[in-house]
Length: 142
Image (tube, rainbow, N blue to C red; front, side, top):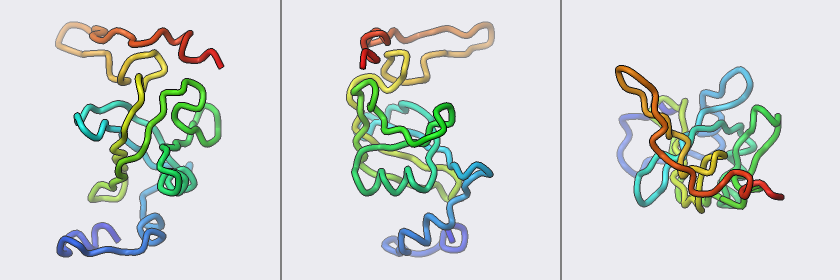
């Protein structure tokens, strides 16, 4: 559906169910999603969603992911209080990656950093270039 309609004019639309049916979920029923701060463009994190997580996110406005380590839905901030509110959810041209434009409260990373991309690679080394905003021990007291 995404490829077949890529030349349609601005304003063309299809039913949500049809769009979700055509997403390129992997064998585990998941699709990758990149979370981006809506106003600054800052890339915050990478995660996964299944169809249920997508539908809940769209229904509630609070971003919900599928946690592979927990084996269940994970509402961002349910442990830390650092929630993501959805501004818009987009699909790439191939239907195989989502972009969640969000309003992030505090740090997005479980390490207490604003984003999960705090390792910088260069030709000689990998360097941590961002400090935690909040001690992870304080994030997960609940």
